[in-house]
Image (cartoon, rainbow, N blue to C red; front, side):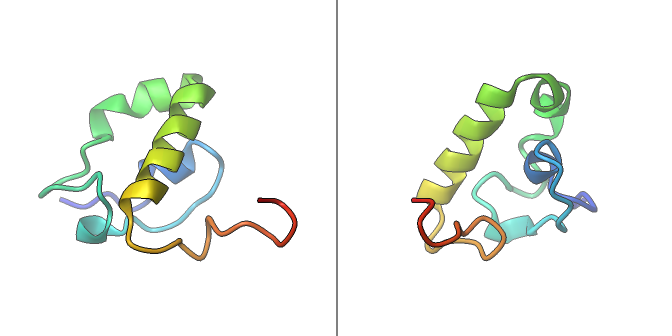
Length: 71
C-alpha cells in the first residue's frame, strides 16, 4: 500500500504525496518505511537519501528544484 505522504520529504517538513512507482525507493511498497524513525532523527541520512534519489531519477522533481543562484 502506498503511503499518503512521502516519508523522505516529510522528514524535511515538506508534505507531498507519495509518488509511488515513480520513486526509485518504491518497489510494491515504500522501501523507506522501516527507516522512518531514523529519518526523523538523522538529518545527514535524509540529505544523503534526497541527493541519491535525485541522482537516480530521470529528471528533477518540481518541489526539489532549486531556486536560481542556489546550485
